[in-house]
Length: 222
Image (cartoon, rainbow, N blue to C red):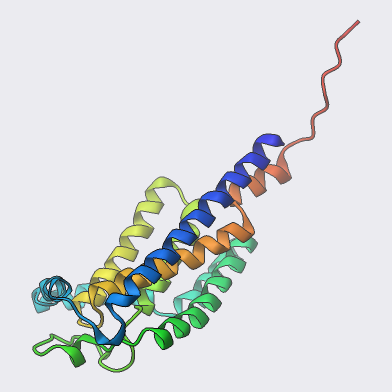
């Protein structure tokens, strides 16, 4: 039992530390994007992704949809079907956090889309209006990958993070966001998910705690 409690505390401490680091990262990059600021380095990196061949759009499009907000309720339903109650609650909390904190960030840090700030942008997606910082698609994709990470085997963890990476890559490729918009979205998504982990605790330790048989101190035989 003491080992289980120790595991839970370690998991919560790590999750809280990651959430705090994500918050600091989001706060740290905000001065570099607010007020439509755009550095030459970020412009160069954006051009590198956005100038890739147009034929990549069709095979990349299905993966980008994994960042749509509709994925959140769909993931909740899947978790409920598999009777992962804690995971379903965590995904729902991630969705609420994304809606609220995403609006707060976009209100405090004003940055328009690449199509507005640059000329010659290959706008392959209908995202030329609204605020660019942070990328909502990346918030959802990275948030979900972070949230389900402890529930997955190493192989499926690699799949989840690869899909999240494709969403981030796609948002740059279609000209919807600048690199720091994507970094900010990843920080916000991972930060929200780690706060959820801090509150709910580790799934495996919970299961072990419920199923582990009670033991008594051994009594030496006379």
